[in-house]
Length: 179
Image (cartoon, rainbow, N blue to C red; front, side):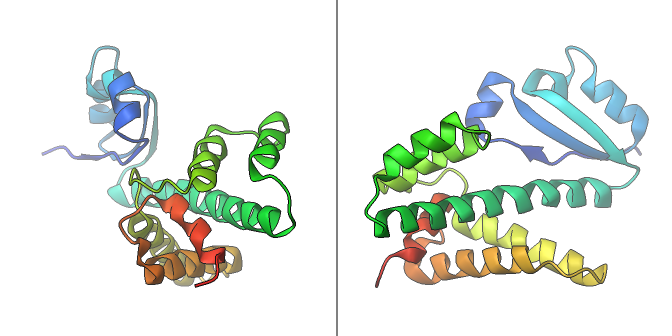
């Protein structure tokens, strides 16, 4: 039997537009068939990578994306909280970020949610924190310190503690508000 593990990056909106990213591990010939024009991965996603012969590599590669996603949104939450405390307009700071070398669709979308206080779930806090926890376990297994990931993980744990486990992970912004 042939097997292919293919975690995705992207949500239901990306799937509807055929813009998922596939990170595959397993049988190479099955990957080639699944990612050929007109096949499943090609229809649902516009990019796909073969990262190794087992599911382990695809799971690990997906965690690497989750480190960046969680860290970026965590840093954005802290930036916007400090922006507000400094008496600055968070929408204006978001505009500045969007016009700078730091512009990216994730920060633009999650920044708007943070400013609006709209945490309707898309990718929940508990899922982001789970991925950071798994990443820290991998780093521990590989004897590599990961202090930035640990600090970000702590912020998502705090968001869960504040009742945001099922909210969009942009709710990490509320960790910086006084209880």
